[in-house]
Length: 198
Image (cartoon, rainbow, N blue to C red; front, side, top):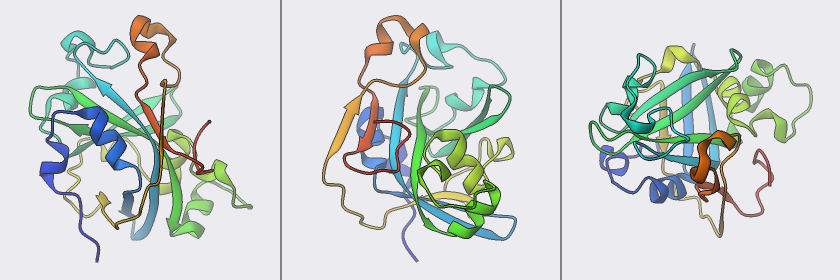
């Protein structure tokens, strides 16, 4: 057994630092009796209330965004384009709406299950490279919104996987975010093929 990340890992103030430190950690799911796991290779940080790319920009509170205002260490899952379930990690203390989008993972365990869920015949990076793809492969849906990452359904482990070098670049699909679209708050493991884009 590998240790789950502690609550204190998620409750820190620096969402960019946490985003980087999630690289190399292992996202694990045990859903419908099926176990899958992947190494986190790509993340994006969202730092509301000032971040114009965040769903919680300007402290916006709706039924969907209310999860942001919980204490860190829970999952935030939302539906994008009515198709893709996107998995985020809520961080920081209560009422500080920070979150990290998990954009890609490298398949590690339960790969056959992932391929079945994704209806894939061939193993390639499209299996889990991209936030919608990884959620489908790992079985994550909106049913897992607000799930505590300390539980035994969706969690993140530290397996002491070394990360040699991290690339920092701009986030994807946020052209509406004015000056915040240029923030280098997307991070990925340099040289890893399991990322959504270079």
